[in-house]
Length: 425
Image (cartoon, rainbow, N blue to C red):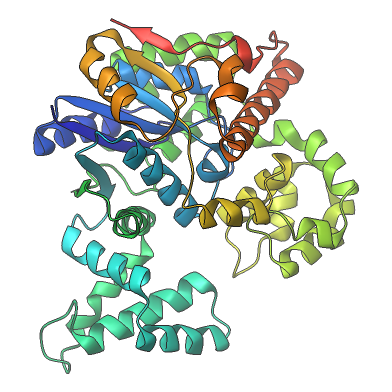
């Protein structure tokens, strides 16, 4: 039995995702596919378009056999936390043969070169990184320049003449979000000495930030933008597989999409009661950003406007929204550091599965190094203290997400303990 692992958000599931699933199965020769998917909030720090069980169902209808939730501190974290948490979950299953991810470059060799460099951190690279940080560059920019120079001069990536300027084109790889995530996936596999084999597919869809709908595979960002602007229009329907569209349409008829601004009152209350020092304790919040937050908090009107006030040349909008999400969900840096120190612990929370994947489910039960939690009520007896802390954060995130649905759209509050996995034939 061959099993494929995929890490995704499916926010929403679209034709580019369907293409990725199909091609990944072909390349890996897999019999079954396990998807690790973010829950109520995504890596940008924004609430998902629909709830996690709805998104899991769209994945199962389009080729997935088992969908597991990525714990919230990882799902809303930096590329490192997101990737290492997700890889840890796949690795703990004990039955995953291949991890397939999309990338802008499609060049696994170059991605692995950077992954080894960032994992091993040789002395010369560390010196270059230190130098560029002292020049005032942000960590991502300093890391990119240090890696470019190290790999160029040691000819780990570029084997042509050092006088040839074209040799330095490889640095483009670090300018694209899916390449960076791919590097972190491979870095996590290397760090765990995992037997999972990575493969990458070049993105056949639009770029991660491309908002055009006039393409074969529009990005999830473009589709979300179109839905917020025009609802489930013909252009949106054209970008989503029919089975996924039916599920999405039913979900959005029941409850319109939740926006980050719908959490403005909760976040503003939290900001009013937090000192600068307390703000700096949350994930992804530096002392400088904490100071900006404190100085601007009395200008708060709604989250989107507040994020615009906080944005600088060095701080991207995504970084700001992720930081604000961490305040909203009470995700502290010290807790993340503990998770990293403990080698990214996980637990297995199935959001959905296919009955026909019986052999896969049996293999997970037999080989997994992490507990399988099907009923939330069993958490206290099945999970270790650190796993239970992850579970509590997932429950809290789900309930905060539900609270916005109740307040904005008058839906009935659904307690996470009453939810059960989606089960398809």
